[in-house]
Length: 308
Image 1: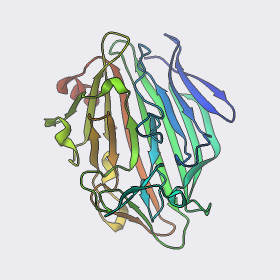
Image 2: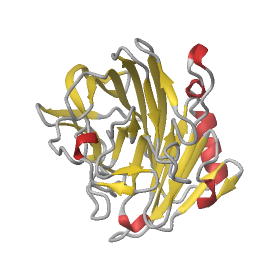
Image 3: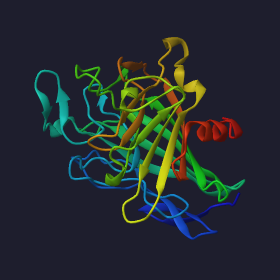
Image 4: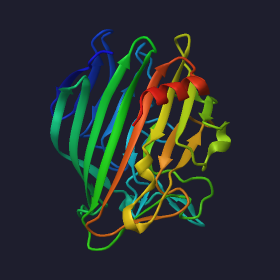
């Protein structure tokens, strides 16, 4: 294992590099200015240890898709996802008055400790009008850089506190009436070459995993330009299934390999999640980025060797 290196371009981005290879594993861009696309921090490019890019940025079909980011497609009538808003019976409409933002406030930590790169950030969530709806404490850690297995891992933790005097309602296009479109929360958009890639879960595979539950889901694709494949494994922490006394909200997977590659462990696929005033919603995820087409046994062995 090797410790990553961090370079902070103040006011713009934090870049994390594998010092053994010189590969920039990711850039965390924290002050984008794209109003209609729901301005929010994002990670792009995301790279394997071999240097291959495994994320997409502003693709022509969905300009608001940006690598790996935390989003809220339906939030108490607001759209913090970006682009057009889904309205049941009318489809997707251009409603700029619904498009909000997530704003960087400050960093609590940017550095390396215990062989991990740490990006600890405070953000605020806003509807279009600019009111304060939520505070977020976010922690992104880059760790377990392993050249023998050709992999590294990212752990993303977000704690979102409702600052309104009424509940925040987290939903999705599916909770609004569109079938099998429950995207919201942490969302990854894969590169164009990853279309028709292999989707795996512990006991099933394929795009039929849309809307299903599983502790992890993996996506393997083949690169353009270079020979070979890469695999991303997405896992949600066991505690993600709980929201205190308000009830249990298991994560369902939003996943596509056609017409593009995308994965999201949705926090509101079929049912709205309600966050009372002053309460905090905490979610923790892990993303493993690996060179090669990992199979189910290989993924299971890795996760067993790297417990939560």
